[in-house]
Image (cartoon, rainbow, N blue to C red; front, side, top):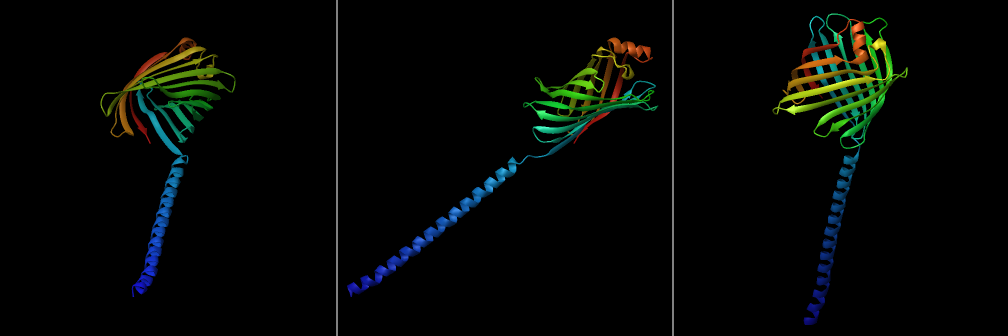
Length: 265
């Protein structure tokens, strides 16, 4: 009887061992597949994050009414770009037009921009100038090469060299700084100067240093993207450019109050 019982128990033990072995193997396989699935999901998410993103940005730093007296004008200065972190296509537009007559000027730029460091972009492209309200409606095209970015102490800087289709060479330097008086009240100061190697009389440009413009604008950000402002702008023509202005009956120096809107999207 003892021997019989022993023969019955041995097959039952082996069966239990096989069942436990199968159960453990199944759990291990399931856990392995789950881990592989999770790893695959993480790799997929990482690859999704590594895909280059195409972003867009549109802004108008200045959309303003300039009160200069009888010849009040509207002025604008805006830009947009599309691209990623390193390569972008920029479009810039600046100009003015009179509110009492058909006269004004326009400057358009289309540029390829490449990030050369954390704070600086090198830009190259084309620029188009056009004046109206003047006999002949002067128009010219230029090549543009410049550097734009953030200098130490948070100065925003743009420096460009231009070469026209007729070989005229000119340059521009612009710098601005935002002083935060509060979380919403911001005082922006700005300076811009232009210079040229050759005289271009149809555009009222003389050789040498052409002009200097100083401005201060106090804006209130109702939202970060939307801020009305009030300020003052002063421009002084210099050297041969001032002589050309005098010869045509224009002003050499003038200042004006400005009222405008700063917005971005």
